[in-house]
Length: 309
Image (cartoon, rainbow, N blue to C red; front, top):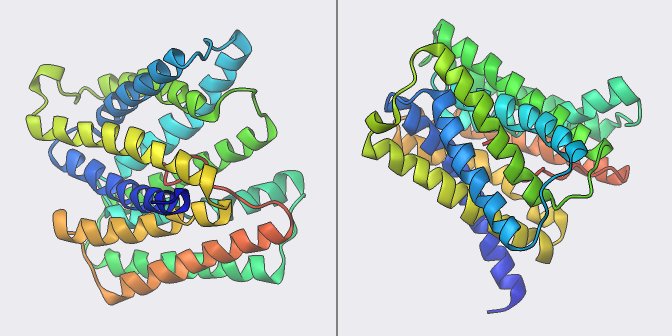
């Protein structure tokens, strides 16, 4: 098997595993696990695994300056983006949550334009943004008939906040780079987030004692750590090393489709033609925005697990 063939297998693994991550998190929440507690355990153990791996490989402990940077990124990318998106799964379908997360390139363009005025909103960019909004609208209203409750609107709102936080984190990383291995840095960000998420869980008064967590939930956590944070992460690294970035980043467009299909068959989420059409329209819009940015030599490459999970 050639290196390129292995890279495409890695792309497939990344796309499928990170798509099913949304559904696994949804399942864990449906089992009665508090979302923030689930994220805290998953990020804590997953991040610690990455840290130990890279320390064994010879990486040094972060300096104080690097630690402050890691802490800020942890709050944006894993406390708010990951924690809030997991919380939203209590109220909205995993496919919709994944689709909202996939919108982050659109918000990056808008933020960059407003704050730094260094992106040009071309006709292609505008078309992509318009399609993204229309597609999300289709999926939103199709699900509204089933999930017409205050919780549904809260879930959508929280998902949007999580997506915006991921966008700000992406921009901050691009403009404030540290001379650190990005994957080692991600491990620290995940690990640090578990303390904040743990505090949120404890403050809610609804957290479950470790000894009372069911075997089913531990299996979900194990899947999130081993499959998502380690296997898919390693596959993503290999893919990025051996395939062009434009191809390696295709997983970000496949994730929501995987989440939608798997969610329908495992956690009984609604699956219909309008949802597929809306998802396709949204992802087409995201693709057009990325293409327009590439033409401006500012291609938006997903940051590690771009679905925010």
